[in-house]
Length: 196
Image (cartoon, rainbow, N blue to C red; front, side):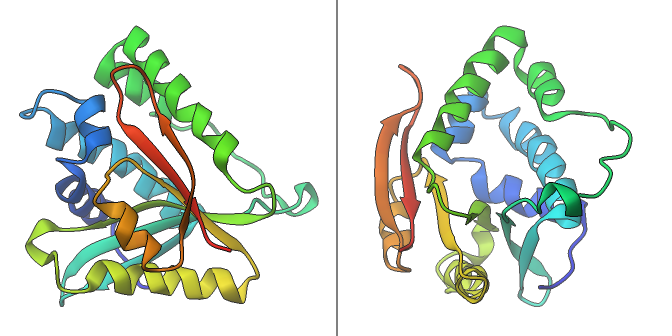
């Protein structure tokens, strides 16, 4: 794993996901969307850079990021959570969307956990490559780094994608669709995928 700053990670991810169906559903205004995405992904980057697995693609500067959530340690091994820090995910989404819309989106996203494997697994939360570096094999390279780590750890890998173009990409790397669901009446279709 290589190092990347939260600022660079959020910028790469915002550029990669600006036209993603989930982000379009979250933030319909195209002028606001890149900034809202950067704020959202910045919070994820801060979290994963301290508590997850982050793989970085360099060309030579960082142009791609994959962020994985690993199984939580046993309660005896868990570190003290420390003081609450702002913004919280719910607080940020409420600030960006308003309370009613944030509740709708949060409820829809929360429903996806039912499609994840019951056994310990690694969850690929985000994989994005800056559009200027697309179609050069970088996404597959990033994905394979994480998949190698999951195999070495004896874990199933899983993810959710809302972009139909991503489904064959992930299938080509050993994932299979476990469920296909509509997030909300006006929301995107989600493909829940896993290895093994």
